[in-house]
Length: 350
Image: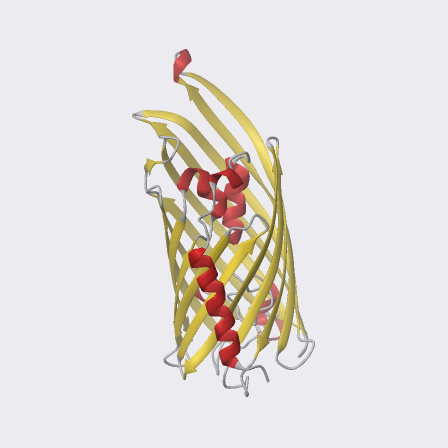
C-alpha cells in the first residue's frame, strides 16, 4: 500500500513549486496568434471543481466530471438514484484587470444497459476593460455538449462526446469598435477507460475540432475603412491519464492520486501552436464527507501552475466542491497577465 502522507507531501511540493515559480512571461507566447492561444487556454479549463483542484488531471478518473467521456458510466450515481444535476460557476481574475465568468449546467442520466448520457450547457462572459495593448476587451461564449459513456465490464468503458459553441470577441478603442470577431466551434471526443489491476485506472482521450471565425477590423487611420477576414482554427488534443486509489478499502474511501499528460496542436493561417503539459494532484479524504485536494501543472515552456481545493459530501445525494487555481492560463499572459481562478460545483442526485 502507498503511504497517503507521502503523496500528500508530493502534492505540497507541487504547490510550493508553483507558488515560487516565475509568472508566465509574455515572451513565451507573444509571437503566436491570439486565436490559437485562446483555443489552447479553453482546452485546459474545467468547470468541475474536483478536476480543477487536482491540476486538471482527470483522463484516468472514475468520476463523471472527468474530461474522459468513458468515465460517464464508470461509477453508479448512487443507491436507487439515476439522475444527477450539477450547476457550476467559475471566476477567473487576470492581473491586467480582465475577469472571465463561466456558468455551466450538466445532467447525468443513467440509462441502465445503454450506459449513461450527460448533456451540458455553458456560458462565459467577461467584463470590459483595457488590456496591455490599451484596447478594451469583451468576450462572450455559449456552448452545448452531449456525451455518452458505457461501462462494458469491470475492466473497460468507452465514451464519445460532441460539443458546439458560438462566441463573440471585441476590442474597442475609446468609443470605436476596433475588432469584432464571431466564431463557431465544433469538437468531437472519444475516450476509453481501463482498470488493469486493483486500485488502478488508466484512460485515453482523443479529440479534434475546428473553429470558424469572421473578423471585422476598422482602420481609423484611413477613414474607418473596414476589412473582413475568414479563418479556420483546427485543433487536435490527446490526454492520457492514470489514477491510483491508495486507501485500504476503495469501496468506502476513494482517496486517489492523478497524473495526466496532455498533447495539443492548434493551427490556422497565421501559424501553429503545439503544447505539451503534465498535470497531477492528490484527492484525500481526511474524514467521512470531507476531502482535501492539491495539484499542479507544468508545460514544456516551464510555466508552472498550482491548484488546491476541498470537497464536502454531507450525504449520498449532495456534493459540494471548491477549487482555486493559480497561473493556470499562461497562454493568455501577453495580453492578460497572470491569473487566479475560483471554481465551485455542486451535484444533486435523485
